Amino acid sequence: MKQLVLASNNAKKIKELNALLAPLGIEVIPQGQLGIPEAEEPHATFVENALAKARHAAQHSGLPALADDSGLCVRALGGAPGVISARYAGEPKSDARNNEKLLADLAGERDRRAHFVSVLVLCRTADDPQPIIAEGEWHGEILAAPRGAEGFGYDPLFFVPGKQQTAAELAAETKNRLSHRGQAMARLLERLTAE
Image (cartoon, rainbow, N blue to C red; front, side):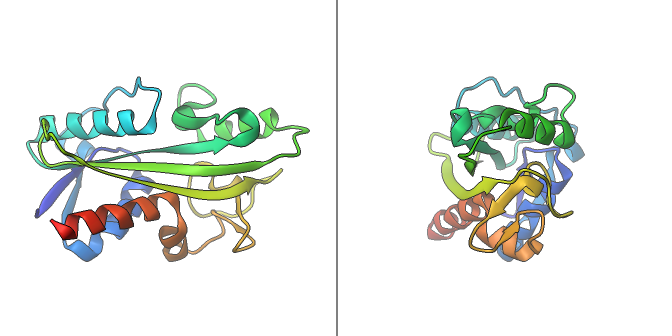
């Protein structure tokens, strides 16, 4: 595989996934560069949404496609924001408004445990009967106020106990190694290199 389409228009996610795929020497083409519109994400699970996005990008491009569906699951909120993490505070998508809503929803809550989930799906073709599916989870807790300027999404609120930093305070290489997306990518790469 020399090229693949990345089923995302999120510039920071594209940068993160490009860094994780660099060792394979695969050219990663963002779907927006090919004029592919975003896929619908109507499903209740990360895996179904990732599969829909990967099939959509593969169908429109004729190339293998990689999709990530990820989000934050907070225990005290019954797993919310979950699959609607990017749109938790409604449209248009806004990291700042999502973080404000999360803090408001957790006001007075003592249990602030949370984890990020990432499901990566690689479809070799749009109708691939056996896509590669890899998952990762990253556990931490939600702070009462944001810290750090790196990363995106909920990173400034996500405290990583083992590092005593938020995801937004970690160096990019460290985050890529520890994160839910980094873990999912490591599993995906194991599967790819075994083929």
